[in-house]
Amino acid sequence: MIFLYSKEVEKILLKVQKPGRYTGGEINSVIKDKDKVDLRFAFCFPDTYEIGMSHLGMKILYSQFNSYEHIWCERVFAPWTDMEELMRERNIPLYALESGDPLTEFDFIGFTLQYELSYTNVLNMLSLAGIPLLSKDRTELKNIVVAGGTCVSNPEPLADFIDIFFIGEGEEVDIEVMELYRKCRDKGCTKKEFLRLAAQIKGVYVPALYDVEYNEDGTICRFQPTEGAPARVEKRLIMDMDNVYYPDSFVVPLVEIVHDRAIEEIFRGCIRGCRFCQAGFLNRPVREKSKETILSQCKTLCENTGYDEISLSSLSSSDYSDIVGLLTCLSEWSDDEGVSLSLPSLRVDGFTDDIMSRIKTVRKSGLTFAPEAGTQRLRDAINKNVREDELLKTCHVAFSGGWTNVKLYFMIGLPTETYEDVEGIAKLGQAVVNEFYRCENRAKGRGVNVTVSASSFVPKPHTPFQWEAQNSIETIEKKQKHLKESITTKKITFNYHAAYTSFLEGVFARGDRKLCKVLSKAIERGFHFDGWNDCFDFEAWMDVFKECGIDPKFYASRKREFDEILPWDFLDYGVSKDFLKKECEKAYNSETTPNCREKCSGCGAACYKGGVCVEKR
Image (cartoon, rainbow, N blue to C red; front, side, top):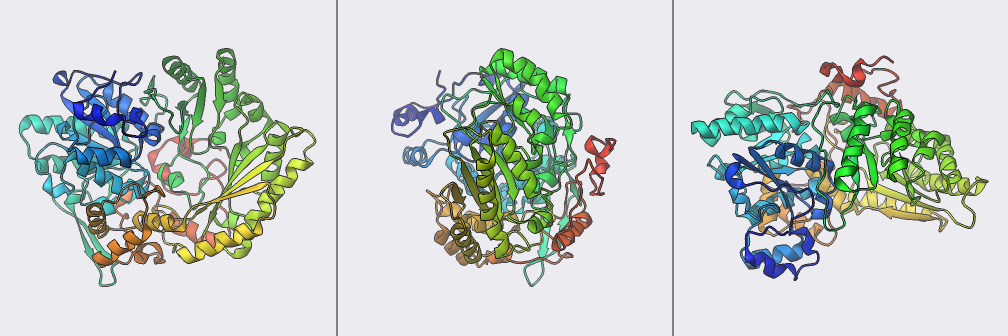
């Protein structure tokens, strides 16, 4: 069944690459009578259908919102360039998949922000919907534009456009804001009155209620709340993972998506403290689901979706406190039902014979590990706490189990990195190749392929490296060339990311409100899908920065002093700035910090009084 608000859409579907992106009508999609609901929420993912439909956060909140009879949440994805061109040509506004209604019909227009280079898509989607981009130009109590996700850890580059940012986890705070909206609407409140009240809810940041003053050198002098808004905005956190809402079904797509399988979240947070990893600090502390809850949810998901593969999702799945017991429990059911289990985020030191034997049903297309750096000195500096002998032992276990493809993820441009560290990446890849041929139980008649992927390091807010300068484009390209020349075997495939996109990511990752002007100009120029090589135009971006009188290197390439006021300092994610500073200083000495289960390092997350912070060590 296709739900389209306009016959014009039907006319153009056969003219685009993948019509299934734009039709709706999938199994388990939620259709309600719009005359019988009291609030409508358009959940917008600022990328293609295939990527958005793979995102777990969208799956959770879509189902949760629709579990309330009076709320109808619908999905909206960024149309690819071919579809957008036809929509603009025929004046078809952006619409939601379930009803086919344009976004102007919705009370809330919500975006999930997972990647800085999707910011132009956020604004382009509003433009395509015919909704004013600037928050101040949307004066009525409708079309409230909200945003959550990883990138709201520094929301300032989008401050002029978004009415409300949700800081932290959304299951509770989103509903609280929607209920407040219903009350304010029934009382006849203005949008401004609603936003003032919303700002009092923990986890809500209303940028219009804050003023920013700058020093002559462009750094921030003062960040001032107004009209009773809190000076610090604390993140929202779900502590009871066994009782938090989790879907009993997912929308099953009609076209192939990036991760086309059932997904079960087994815990949130990470014990490790890798100094480059934003997610590891934003989501502290670790909070686990029980084995019983995980088993029950896995069974239900597979029954209601028909999937025969289930992925156990977390930042580091092998760090589940009883991972072998969990896999044993799950495999007793999955073996009987013909369901395969996968662990997509394994640590080098977490892949054991026990784990391998319990995920043996997964096709042996390859295993992925992330040493991150090529030498022990640099791995210690970033607190990766992984040794080369552990990686080789892990690969030996995998090769003995029949795997022949291994992917290794690294970063180039990490703080304190030297060209010797870059060469170390090639040497480590070669060591893995050699380990395959040392393995007596390896798959016979097959060769090994080691894929070395090197992304460019981008310093992120709320991490120990938030003060560091990002390597210049020229330096990254020299290091990429050096690494490529250091690889001497065809058994290693080398992949790397363009330095230009990483530079722009770094600009918006640590930018301030002055970048709103840049984004406005970018939308006037028709920029979108900047995370895709097909659409990204670095020179055009540099022209926009020049027109706006803003030097992007100020944000990407400048090392900050520890006492500088950072654009995101008013956001409280539970980890103290003093702790991050100490971790940064330890990096300069390649000094490691034990993981949270070995020893508490006093990061500040114990304030939540739960999770790993209260476990016995």
